[in-house]
Image 1 (spheres, helix red, strand yellow):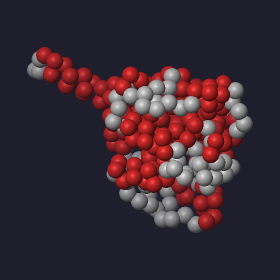
Image 2 (image 1 turned 90 degrees about the vertical axis):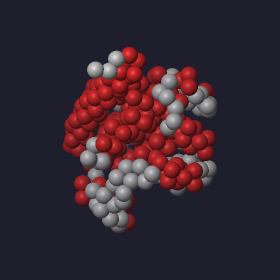
Image 3 (image 1 turned 180 degrees about the vertical axis):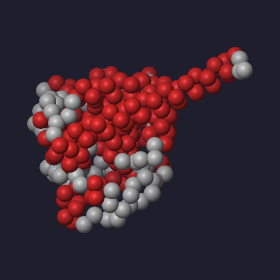
Image 4 (image 1 turned 90 degrees about the horizontal axis):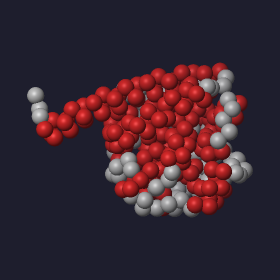
Length: 270
């Protein structure tokens, strides 16, 4: 039997991994049911609340790298797994930026629900091993507006969660979708989630390509800045991947307080 501090650390690490695995599996099961419900109607927001705080607990115990290992370990790298991936990255990034616990919880909800509209996209398109045709791509791109509609119909009123669902594919140069928003018309917390979303997608195994390394994915994010992505957020996101899950460790950059306060409190135009 191992004794002393080393033994304690090893036992705690084992317990942390086991706890993290259980949290991921339970969150995946709950989120899968949510996507099934969204395919035919509204969703129960109480299910989302049952995922948020366990996810944050797993991040505090194992850090973002531990969370990413657990997420990638699952054999099915589908839209549910992607949503868990984005939610963990967003929570870690928010803490790294020094945002409040309230903001962090909001961004976890947004990450979990940002792709809920894909519940109504045909599986043949979601799982297609090759490139999408123009018509298939047009249908795929409807998921952002569909997700926004599902959330509204389900009683979601949080302006950030709604904005992330609809605008997480908008780009600073106006080349995104569905509303071709540009620059300051895209909320900063949406920009933050977009960086997490793109990084997650690039580092996941997809039917049409293998996963990218961290270095290659970050290189693409840098190439997309400053025309399409916020360069300050891209730089801060890279730093957040190596930071522990605590606000005291970094605070390297802050979102503009008036903008964040306005986005969280008064909602503004969607």
